[in-house]
Length: 402
Image (cartoon, rainbow, N blue to C red; front, side, top):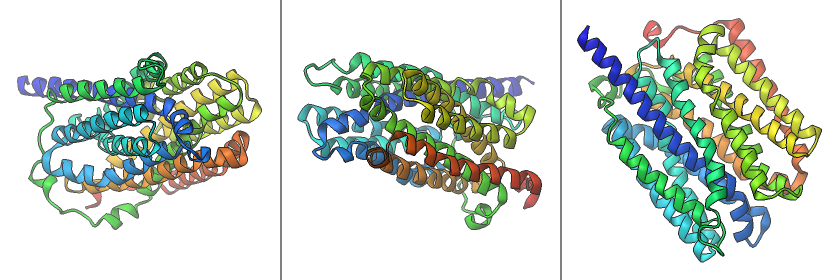
């Protein structure tokens, strides 16, 4: 009993520390998202490229997901996260240098490095599942995502620090982001997740294509992909849309703050909702909430419309992404974990990167309201997929199938 109690306490501590790391990661990411499009707009000679740096960030997140997962399979979660945070620190310093020099190219390099770091940080939620008992798994994932509530200060941090190096705007944002990565590196030293065992290090298990053909995997990826990509598409363009509607940076920062709260505040109870109502129902609710976000954005361009849409988008993303992540944890044995999680995140962030890259060009070409109309068919596909899986019945977990 004493040993079991000690293990439970260690698990709870690791989940808490992972939540802290998640909070630091998401605070830095929300600060970057709040300011990156406006920085790009100021640095780029061709304004249609304003969201290219943030698009490159998401591309590098996508590129990093597979090597990050495979590296952590070899060296463990803690050391893998340390590598990622170190890359992020380098990216923040490059971003600071780029803004001071007025270089759009260097700014793209800085965000590329930060994107690579984000590819590692996306696994905080899976690390929480590793540290938790089977019964606590969905709640552990949800609680780590709940660490993002603290990230709601990220947009405010961007507002507070943007003039730190006046008259050079926004350089202070990246100095603050660099400081957050330093704190992350310190916190990671206290995490005690065991290194991968022999079974996890092995390359056994079912072929990846067999795992990916499972209906549960298909629907998990579909929900996560659409939820994250639509969030990326709309939130990357939000500061630009608000600027063109006459709102100042403080209004944009406040709107992104509400969005971040919408993304992560529900995580305190999403795990409970999943256990009570089922993963598929919660994912369906997420798709409907993003639809309501699009409706609010289409209805008008007042500050209330932007902020209401941002909140609904955040909550919808939370339900879809937490649900998709929970489904993925049901699909693999320890030997299959790294490749299954990498396949999920690589696919998801391919879509996220494409959405971010297209966001600025779409806003320039078709406008804010048309972008919101474009979201609706994708949500319909998700709802059809969820209904199909519910009618078909979920497959057994891999331990039962193998």
